[in-house]
Amino acid sequence: MNETLQAPRAARAIAVIAVAAAALLAPEVAAEAASHGHHVAKRHHAKHKRHKRRRQTHSKAAKAKSMPAAPAPSSTPTTCTSSPGLAAGTVDPFEQHFDAAHLERSPAEQVQDAGDVSTYVRVHTALVEAMAQPSLSAGDEATAVLQKALAPFLAHVYAAHLEQSPSQQAAALMDPSTYTLSHTVLLEQMLKPVLDWVQELLAGKQTCSSATQQPSSGAASSAKAIDISGHMFMPQELSVPQGTSVTWTNDDADPHNVVADGGAFKSKSLGKGESFSYTFSSPGTYAYSCSIHPDMRGKVSVG
Image (cartoon, rainbow, N blue to C red; front, top):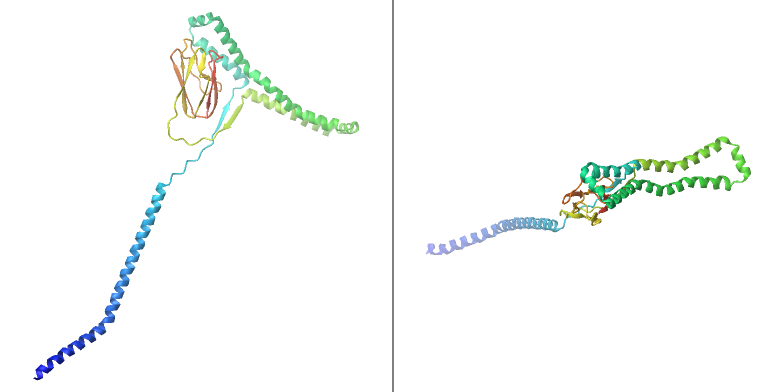
């Protein structure tokens, strides 16, 4: 009987102890669960931030890759050409003609050339004109030079004579040192443009030009051809981009050559069917002629 009553009491006691233990352990379990949840949340947040940074990096890289490259800056080269001096400009056409039409031609060929009187006279008339051209050009420039030389003299006449009274001019003469100095300076001013012009005439004139050069696209420049036919360059004038190669081909039975005025290029005497090529690497205007037949002239403009 006593054992029967004690069994339920023991069961209730065990239940009470279990409830009490659960109550005591609940805060620690809850705290551990909360701590675990907090760590899980922190790891998830850090992982999210890493993914976000990675997406931003990939996005920037994609934008940088898709953006076109900045164009290469254009350059402005300066091209200078020098014309031959008076002596060289006069003698060079004769030497070129003598080499091409006499030294490089056999006696029989020269006799044949002389037999064609009209061509012979026309060729040598053009030769004389080519030899006289530097002097004729100098004559045209002489007028401008004389005007520069007379300008200081006219200014002196107006300031020191026409605008001064006779008594003032007499007083100026009484000061020999000042009078000599002022007229010495006047003489130097008058002679300077003349001396500069003569020096330039003898040494040759240099002219420079600048042109904006766009960066090359990488494509090769096309070649151009000039035919020598009927004692003419065809076409007589040609415009090409920088870097173009131009080829002259002689279609005449008579020999011809291609000689630049400034000496940039010069071919040998070309027989029928022979060619000469030159690549124009610098911008500018290149006038040329056949030194055997100086009346044959052409021009290539490079830009």
